Length: 70
Image (cartoon, rainbow, N blue to C red; front, side, top):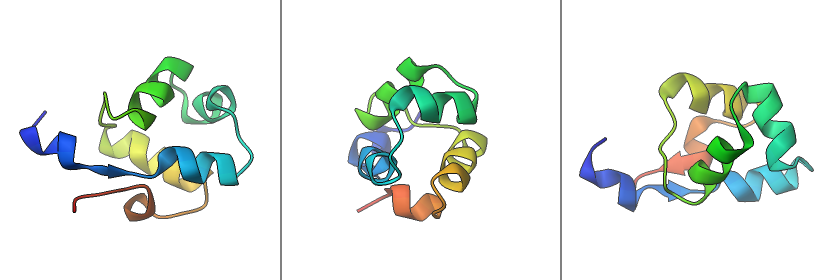
């Protein structure tokens, strides 16, 4: 993982809550653990491209709506 991950702007929690989903519900659809969703939301883990695409599709948005560099 590159050093830029700490600069990554992350709006996953905002979009997840707006969709009315819990971390657990999102994790089931994305086929990862709830802890993975929590780690992504807290900026501890940067998701793979495939996982980011699954999450964006579930939340009916673009990956760029969830994650971007400043």
